[in-house]
Length: 178
Image 1 (spheres, one colour):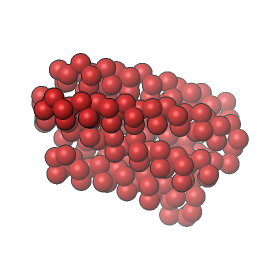
Image 2 (cartoon, one colour):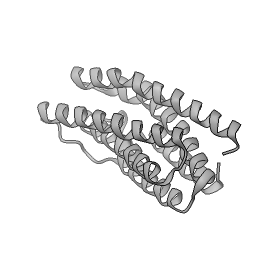
Image 3 (spheres, one colour):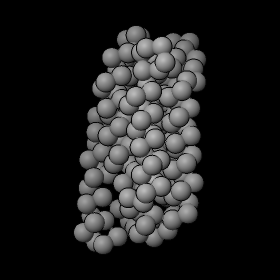
């Protein structure tokens, strides 16, 4: 992984894993809603860039799946928040995710070909593992509303599938030399 991209991934990892608890303890449901929406949007943005920049069939297909699946999760999360009258509340974690996502996209825009594919897929592997860890350790345990908790539990297998898919693409890129 390119050193500057690795720094961006580490920043995103730190944001989700350590800041999810916030400065005053566990995140509230409105903060969790903002974290979920932001985390999905970050992956949608990177996926859209990969759809347009990658020339590798597997990477493009993976990126298209990320855009489709994360758009669907965001739609469900937004609809649930509206139903529950929970307004997503910006917080240090959601802001850090937004910033890290923007940094990642900016760095990816400067890459092309095999270097782009590798950086994008490497980031996706790390990002999905981080999101799964945040779901397990912070977001699901902290959710107070039963419907919000149920949504988080329901979408978790998709993130696991995305991680496995990303690892498969990562492995195939390594074998093909890029």
